[in-house]
Image 1 (cartoon, rainbow, N blue to C red):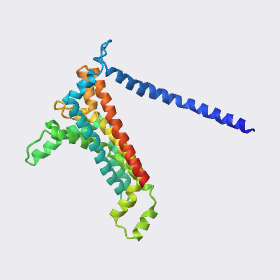
Image 2 (image 1 turned 90 degrees about the vertical axis):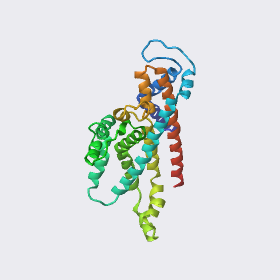
Image 3 (image 1 turned 120 degrees about the vertical axis):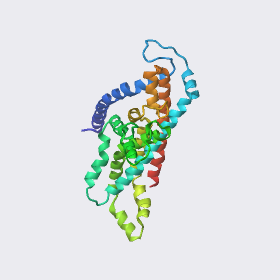
Image 4 (image 1 turned 90 degrees about the horizontal axis):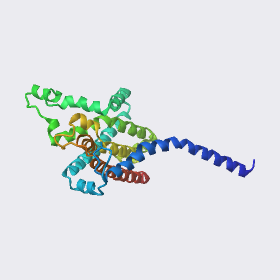
Length: 298
């Protein structure tokens, strides 16, 4: 068989493989790219979400967004949900992983219990915790009253309900961070730690100089996943506070939902969606680039 024949066969095999990508490209194009581009188009209109017609109004929606105090409230909340959940999930997830990487009893049971909340719908998880924090009949206030303390309306307190949402989101998805970190820890050769023991390195020194640098790929994955997930938080907020009181606990996702369905202001909702996309893109890419560089240094 000649070299030319072999090359033609390889080119034919490669071209046939490209056809296998077509369903994925069509799926992404139809369900992600097209809705996204259509959302940008809608953001330049005054469409109410239901009528058959709309008017092009240029940058009016973007001007309105930048001067709307509610915008900066929901942006602040979104950043708190995204970055707060990311920090707590990674710290607690890594702590669980370090614990489960040791020779301890009931390791499999502990891993299952920590991961179990992940398989529950976030909406259901929010309602479970709602009945814990609720003012009337909530388990927390029942405990306070049993101890002779005054009940608190935590879910209606803007200084508390945001952190309750961060806690619930962290509690539910910390198992994912734990599993990823555990996989990274188990890929580290024990020879590194044996050599460190011989050199007299302490446990903290081993963690700082061996463990942390070698699990940086796991850190990168967790940071990016957690940032994206936290910034688009929706279900837990709806079930716990519905964004209230007022807009005090709204995220950008719940704010868009409220604008579209309750206020019939689809054009402005699309504008908020564009802003949300820009924020998620900037923060996730920044985290990806930063932690990838740490992997190279390690």
